[in-house]
Length: 302
Image (cartoon, rainbow, N blue to C red; front, top):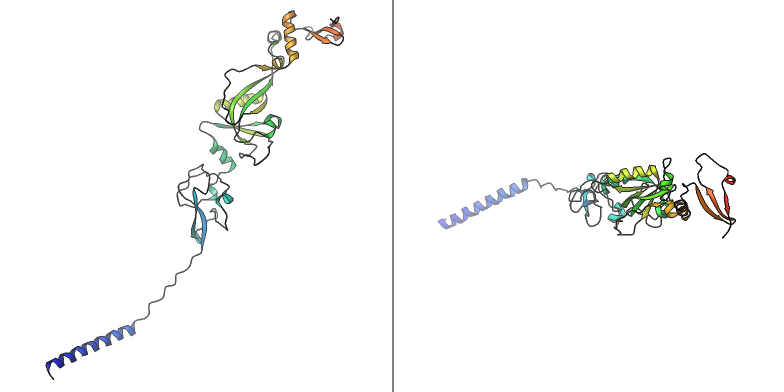
């Protein structure tokens, strides 16, 4: 054999040996195990689209729906079922704590009625409840969010000997404004406006400052309190307080005061016009009670 033939045979032998080794290794290798990915059930829960601060309301704008493994779902999370909207589930509830972006919204973070009251107060304000009725609540048309004036009506107590000096101002009852432009926080335990109609409650919770709270407490012990509904957006303030008493309101009391002033009769007699004529009637007796017949003096009709 010539040299060329030997080279070809040598190359062929090496190729045969290489193929044999490759085939042996291939046949000896075990097939790689097939990895089967386990499917984990997931749930759709409500999460914050961005940071939501305490006191903010839950809405479509600040939340989103995300998928999390079913095993990670906690009882307080809001799980979506069907085509429910954010409002359907949360009713625009307020938050008591801050929720960071992408974190699930928890029902435990919702404000309760008691929490809503404290969260709705402005800095330096107090919530004070007073007793009310249909007549002192504008027939039930005063609702949370309205602004009112608070009026107290009370009986005037005078000292002995003061009657003559104050008879031109008051006989027995007086009324005055205690506070103006006060925000109504709740009627009974409900801080929300009724969807329709009027609501009559037994208590009204008002937002006042520290001094206003003390005025309300004092006024409630002086007499009856009434709430006067203000027009929407009315922020006018009275520059002068007007004295309102039974004398300024009642014509008969004004006439009594005028007669006393004209006659100078120490306030004990008043002229009363009746069908039988004009009579001088004793209003008060210094020595005690005297039968009417003993002090009535008839005057002929003019």
